[in-house]
Length: 399
Image 1 (cartoon, one colour):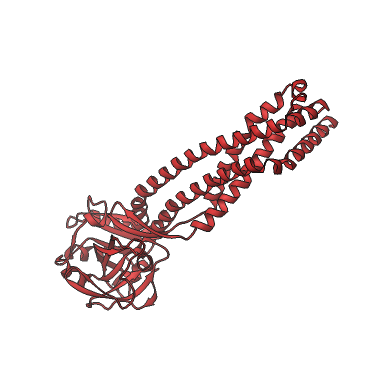
Image 2: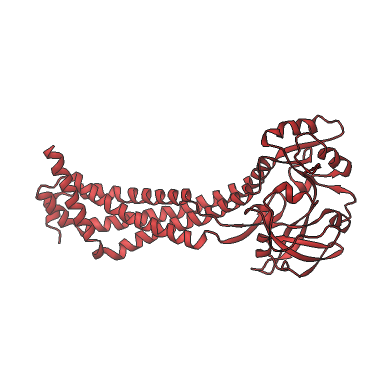
């Protein structure tokens, strides 16, 4: 017990001495800490894009909402349904009803060009023609400015994300879409989901503007409960008059987000790995310099009876302190700079822009700190071993 107490006392003494000498090496110490801070900031910043996009897509879905598309379609752009088919879908069992009316919205999806506010370059913006039930179907669409469009009129409402990112969507503005001119009459929110990147109007008005006749591309339906999905799906897929596929809205949007989030995450991890390698060499250089500058002090401590173990742990602890300080600084900087930052990116499934906000999550910050600590541990390990192996006699003769 006495031996353990003595060993712990040595660790505390040597580590305390090591940390007190950091100001004498502040140049190299700050370089190592800021190198690791850069790794953390880049890692968090890039992956917060993927987290924000994933959050926007997942917030769009609900387990009690079903989406019906043409069989074989992988997106609304490649789907097509006639009026007769949409009526059969609305009559299917499992759909919720309000005042005897099915909560099902037959919808048309087109792409329009609007200039980005940040670059003034044209971007593909999704425009959705919906029926009056669309608001009740989704349940989370709220007007935050202006009013809803009136059925039968050339009026549109813009999602808050679209209004933030694209020019021409201010209330009262007129814009030409297809063969018609449209008036922006409101801005809506939808719980942070991808729907906030869209422009909505009456489907019956949008159809002739794009010469779509009486066709639609999808039907969104609110079910009586999430458990009613299978009944609803079986009724439609077994109907010989229909050739459709039925998916939960949550599954549809999760699939839509897979490609872009995987791509962004891969790029982020690659960039962070390259920077981490540089930061690791910086940490190694710093700790080797620390050991070289303290050769005589370390040798003196060894001559006075301090063991090799406490010396190794003191160098490791110093490296971890620098890494943790850099990691915390980088994480804080990334959080302040990126969390909630609005942006837009291409959804490759629909070739349209999705507006979203960067999202810095606690899990992302924790992973970044773990990476910083790992860099510090590896960066301090080999210098620590060198410090413990210094020949005492020759080290004492160092000037």
